[in-house]
Image (tube, rainbow, N blue to C red; front, side, top):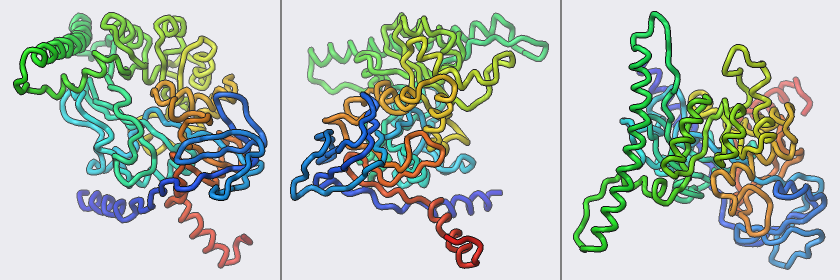
Amino acid sequence: MNKIILLIFTFSILLSNDQIPGKEQKRPILLKGGILHTVSTEVLEGYDILFSKGKIVRIEKNIMASPETDVYDVFGKHIVPSYIAPLTRIGLVEIGLVRQTHDFAESGSINPNVKANVSYNPDSELIPITRSNGVLIANSVPAGGRVSGQSSVMMLDGWTWEHATLKHPSGLHINWPSMSVRYGKNIKKTEKKQREEIQKSIRELDDMVRDVRAYFQIIKQRNRLSEERQKVDLRLESMIPFIIEKKGIYIHAAEARQIISAVDWARENDLKIIIVGGADSWRLTDFLVKNNIPVILDKVEKIPARRFEPIHLPYQIPYLLKKGGVQFCLSTRIGYPHDGNIRNLPNEAMRAAAYGLEKSEALRSITLSAAEILDIDNMVGSLDIGKDATFFISDIPPMEMNPKILMAFIQGREVDLNNHQKMLYKKYQEKYRRLGQINQ
């Protein structure tokens, strides 16, 4: 078995991504006559878009190009801002069944000092596959324990993790304890014991918040009174941006009781949180709106959480959240075997659009809404002047099952859209052409 695993691992290395990252934009580029899905406003047909030094500088009709500008005719083609995967382990895991390719979790329960971007592998074979479907930006998230660590928003192009990092930290991730009490003759723990363990888990989080605030006050006082070197507690130090500066904390919670408990905890401790997963969020729309809590919804294409719920309910949850006024975005499911399926993100939006959500809102849920929740909407998420030139050009409208993406840009850099699957497709297409079994 060990030999088999070693062979698989070696084979994966041999097939690893050897694509060269895109070059920095040297000359302005003008795309003429495209169909612009701005997301922030209406769809603009027959418009030109000019970008320079990685930024969008003009969106108008009939822009006159200067001599140093490269001009591309994209008449009738669709220009779409990058899809944004708000919850993924891309770059942190390569092959789910090969443990040597995992770098997304540390031992122990409390690891707020873990940083996703320093573990990010820019040569992952999953990156070009994901890019080919329009997902150019992903929030890579650590996992494991009660406090998993800090996630990082990564651009899916770059020589190193430093080049690929768009924003760090994008948030701290906490796995909320289960609030369920199990009954039955095979359950060894009593109801009282189970409830005590739930309360203990929440008290530990309260203690953590209290310790960070006390640590921060001690540091301020000592810095004011003396210049002597202070010992640094990396775990407490790393939580200052989230506890003191109130940056976003991502609470992984699915059931209604978990969500309510987490929101109450955040309110009592004056913290900013985002619910991740949120299978029961549709039951709590008024509660979430009242407390201004956004939701990163975990996967549309799945079975209901309960046997008595309608089979199509997961597909309707985005519509129910929109109808209830909850700020949300869509994600694919995190964890094996889903880590390689980030490319299916537009398919999730398309399915939501088939069950009540407007197509424009479905597109927004994987672009601008995701950018707003990740707090990167000043850079990406829509086609607006001043934002990064991070978008793709497609033959067909966004969120279609068979995307025909012609070009893609990340901060003005044209990225390679080739991948191993496309190479195999071309190889065997040529094989059967030579055998006379196809005419192409």
